[in-house]
Length: 147
Image (cartoon, rainbow, N blue to C red; front, top):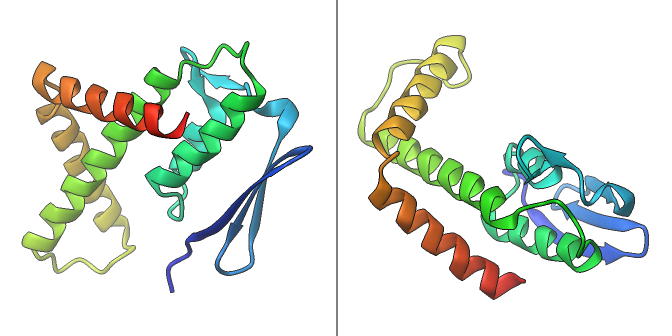
């Protein structure tokens, strides 16, 4: 059974994310404005690496963070441009995997090496002004929906 987010709660001391297996993930309010690199939300970046984190949930968590950190150094456009590109590349890699059957056992070292190189290739091929403009439009639309 795949883990999924079942609830996101805005609590007085932070955000509680509850998964369908009963696992709880907590983000303390005093850490909402942590950044990675050039003004990208540290928490959203970290959550995006979780297999159970879907894009809508990331926007919901970010909207709660934004509500409580108006003077933050986080650039939500940059954060979600990075996240949307990552999800797009992952989606294309998944589609490629389904159309090009592999004999490698799932979770083998070679499987992950091949998948990583495929995602790098897809990222490189899709790093065009046209694709970046599309991703930027998706980010703007989603931010206006959630924030």
